[in-house]
Image 1 (cartoon, helix red, strand yellow):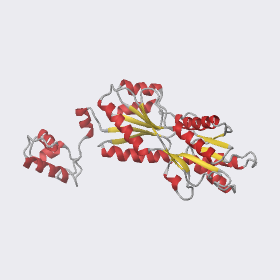
Image 2 (tube, rainbow, N blue to C red):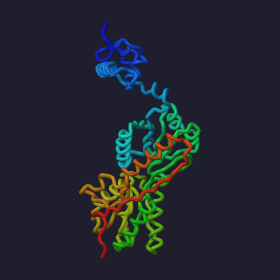
Image 3 (cartoon, rainbow, N blue to C red):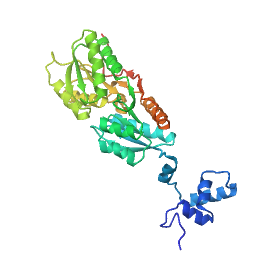
Image 4 (cartoon, rainbow, N blue to C red):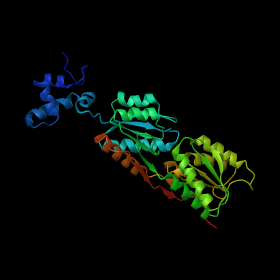
Length: 341
């Protein structure tokens, strides 16, 4: 008969290890946990067997015993915007250092469906990070009723959730201040998703600061938070007659700013000589020489750190009240905004 474990069709379990070691399954379980009641020699022998046979702990059994799975649900925005792919990489890396694993439950634009909230319970996740998907009131109630804590990242909170976000309003103001200081006077804003609190706050900060400074209200164009949306908005601006054409464009996401810049270049407009451009997010592509985009960079590392801190605290104590943390973005002035006269 073939031995169990590596090289055989039988999966290594506590039971098969116990049979091979000639001890009770409870002894194997205690030995693998380092229980000092099991002799050091036995612990070492069982650990060696477990390694040789490719034994992996049964996470489901551990969950049933402890009530914790070590899984964190992740609901991700559309990866058409590179910011969300970068956020996912940061979250995976930081979760791993805490002994946690992320389970991707949803990726894309639009609301987090109620069945996604139900999946949080089916997979017995300890908590959930939501980055740019709306949480319906019903989904919020599902999570709250089953004491599954939720932390929004890059979103202001809705019902039954804590949140960590960049101060989007202040970032929009910073772009307006920079444009005004550069002597720019005709503005356009390329908007994101109309139901995104993130996009709306950036636009609101920009427009309110222009109004407070008695500067011209901006032309508004839809960009949908995508490269193609930014490109189409850039084409529309490039077709305008020069006296009416904006001399400064604020795209509320870098990916749209990059699309608009490509449209300007194809139309023969030079950035920033003919038109200045600024974005928001600080994605990796914004710093590449082909774009050198002026942007408000979100503090991504700190946002994820604070979000996991909030989540861990609420996993440990589900009665903690919801909390919102706003972090300041960093204005990075690069080559796409002309200098003041």
